[in-house]
Image 1 (cartoon, rainbow, N blue to C red):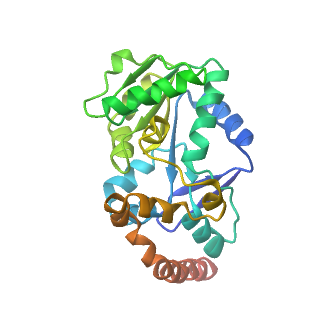
Image 2: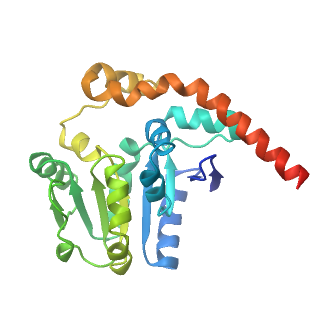
Length: 248
């Protein structure tokens, strides 16, 4: 496990394998009784630099997991760390399977009614038991959420992270593990399609997504053009911090 504090004070936690992550999740849950897990890829990382409410919501995380080539490259260049890509589209199915195999109760909250039903049907076909699910277009009925269960929230960033912050007291009281999953329910439902494996192996799934749904994806990925500027700008900030520490 490797924790890196970025220039905006976000703490990204890297793991050497899925198994290490799964074991640490159970350990941390046992220690503090609840746990919030968020993902961070390049687009929301840029957004968090401008959106103070979003940035504040991320500080409620037990773990922020590195997701995608953009953020991993940024960390490699500026911090000299090579982290495992814990992208949610690959990790979430394994995470759900892990909790299910541990007989932990799983609930889903997010997306449309049609897609959440298709998502649950797909998971059931894989012998995954979902004890409660609800679409994301109305407030979650917490009376249906059992204590010490696992709640996956798919409402998109930054809405889902801010939702977690606003419901933090209840999450803590009910001793939940909460995982924010973005559009994972829509992928599981078959509404969105993954890029072919050879494209994923080339680290180019983001290009496939733009071509598949330009209206949705272009506004998100436009931030990629600022990548060199952020690398340069944050490099200067880090050098300045090092000098300040030397002369203090």
